[in-house]
Length: 73
Image (cartoon, rainbow, N blue to C red; front, top):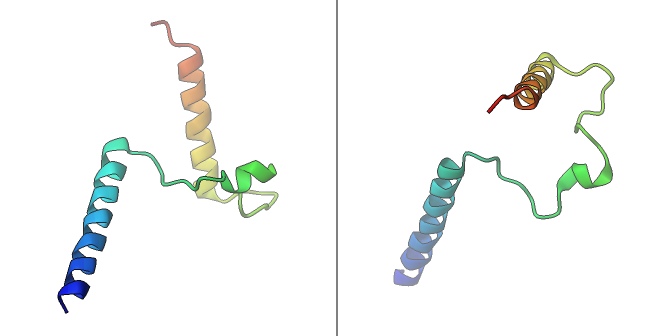
């Protein structure tokens, strides 16, 4: 029983450490191989007309790119 408890505590410790790292970096969790981006697929749904959520995200990315391009300082 003590082995089970020790394994559970170690597993929970790793989850907590990964959560803290995620919160501090504020970066999405990614795989090591690059996922669909390596295959040249921009989006997972592969539909002609993206959903509203995707459109908003694309507009926000475009806005940020323009702000970064036109930044004075």
